[in-house]
Length: 431
Image 1: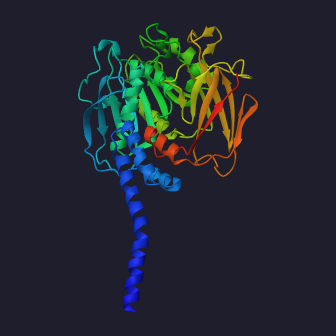
Image 2 (image 1 turned 180 degrees about the vertical axis):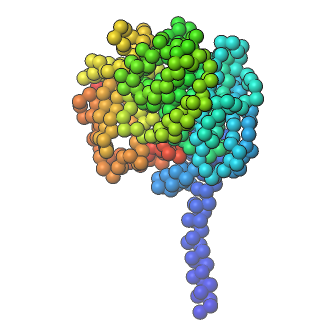
Image 3 (image 1 turned 90 degrees about the vertical axis):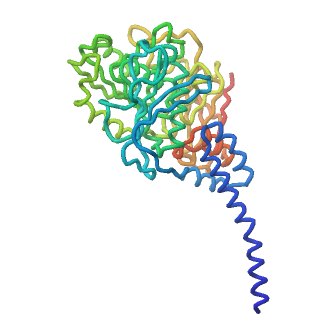
């Protein structure tokens, strides 16, 4: 009997070894994925996960859980990065005392003013948030200069690189990353909101003016106020501001509100071009940020782009531009005021408006011949058909397969536990 018992124990061990090895291989592959120091490095590690044959459900579970965070030093840390365009950037990170790696933290980017007076984007001062401190959170202070102002694609690359790096080091609440700024930094917040909405929950421009972006040296013809409709804004301007007084700014602020942009507007009648009003506004500012977390899979999206650089808003990617059969002759556009356009249109652009109801998506397009929908199992039922209607015509109606490859591709790019995609649907519109 003892001989048979030993035989069956050995046989059981042999049968368990492949599963144990697969589990061990998956563990090591995901550890490498989570330990990657950049989106590119994470993308290169994806093959290792695919090679061990991980199921979709297992990959989904691990990505939802995310990496395990270690304790980090509190206080100010001065850091640098080099964006993919070869520009070096300095930035400061303020970590709250008693940082707890098991807790998810809100992040506020605070963009400084006076860009034109800085010859470069090197660090200035101590890197502390200082008098603009509010609720407990992680503060990020990037730096800009005359050669690298906030209103450039370089700075969008910079903020994206910082967000990615933060999420690899600190337990960031992906749905509570906000962008605020003062003066030039506020104008930069408007710019970023119109070019790169996906990573951020809200935008909070203080003492800024969107129309600064009409400057010939800034406007490239691809500035789209309609894109502001995707995220809420908290706006402060002063009545005695020597640069951007409320009498000049308010007509545009009120126009945007009337055009469907959600703006919590806080004019300061006695306010000058400074933030002396901060103690009175701080609580409202922080309540706004707390009350408006990002929806990683918004039911409605509207996005306009003129190139393939800033062509994504969450689960929508605009792939090709041109005239499609049956497209809208015009779509309601926040760019147009009663007396003319806010920003000139001297280049061709394309726009897609989406509404999702269950497994059905309705799209209205103008100037777009091809776009991709990124589908998350969090909001779509993959066991039922997905239906897409574009410009009144059915362009897709079928079930989609859960794809580990797609899941890992976007997880590597977004580094986001709350925004995962299990399939892509490419929509090609007839010309």
